[in-house]
Amino acid sequence: MNLLVTGVCGQLGYDVVNEGAGRGHRITGSDIQSEYSGIVDGAAVTAVPYIQLDISDETAVRDVFCRYRPDAVIHCAAWTAVDAAEESDNRAKVHAINAEGTENIARAAKEFQAKMLYISTDYVFGGQGERPWKPDDECYMPLNVYGQSKLDGELAVRKLLSKYFIVRTAWVFGMNGKNFIRTMINLGKKKDSVRVVNDQIGTPTYSRDLARLLIDMIETEKYGCYHATNEGGYISWYELCTECYRQYGLRTQVIPVTTEEYGLTKAVRPKNSRLDKSKLSEAGFQPLPDWNDAVRRYLEEAKP
Image (cartoon, rainbow, N blue to C red; front, top):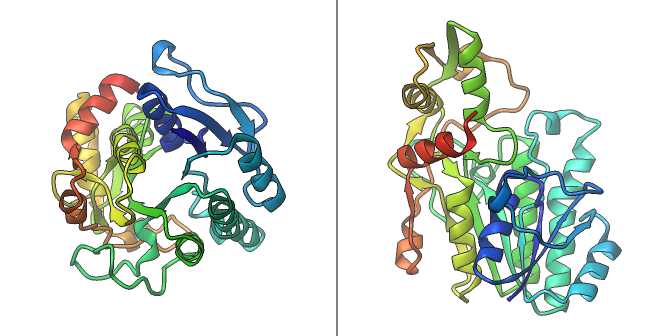
């Protein structure tokens, strides 16, 4: 399969490229940066063609599709700086990337009859309650600019395409870039104690495990909206940090606090990030491994 992957300088895009190329697909990677900026660790990196692409430029997107003629596109590119998205100077840019950029990709996919897989987020929901969100639940009143922009991207994909996958995920961590686990390990090495929110509930997602699932999906025609995180139940950020410190061997004290007590973020975060992933098994896809095991493998591989 001739596969275009956007956002390859990020955590997920990096792993998608390696997973797809490892299975023999012809991969072209793209991102906004002039040169590829992913980590380089020997055999783990697969050399693929890289092109600079501003997805908010409709003409540039169409030119890439015209040149490479992909059979499918896995769209990982996004503005993911949730707090920065709230700044008035950034809001138009966030919408241009996450909503208009996704629409540009979808329009090109339609013209060139390519499958499209769009990475979305639990932030498209309102973030309240305790019931896990199902893929067909109504998305209403996202809590922040980022969530609304990703929902607008979903709506564009649904409007333009019939051959699409929408995969909502949450709490992603991976080798290539910053993430919660790496940040907390670094803090734990320097501090005697850290404060971590204990009333936001979800499940972590190792980008390497998710990448495997995404390639599994794009090789099929089982289109639709899915939820995907690692298995192992629902936890808080506090519980995730505690487990990371236990596995890493840090004795740093982890102090649980409420979102209100923490109070350091500009964007409102969802307290309910639980995602119902049962549709994966129903469609015949292999669920992701337990999150405890994913943390163990990440710590062994990343050595933060």
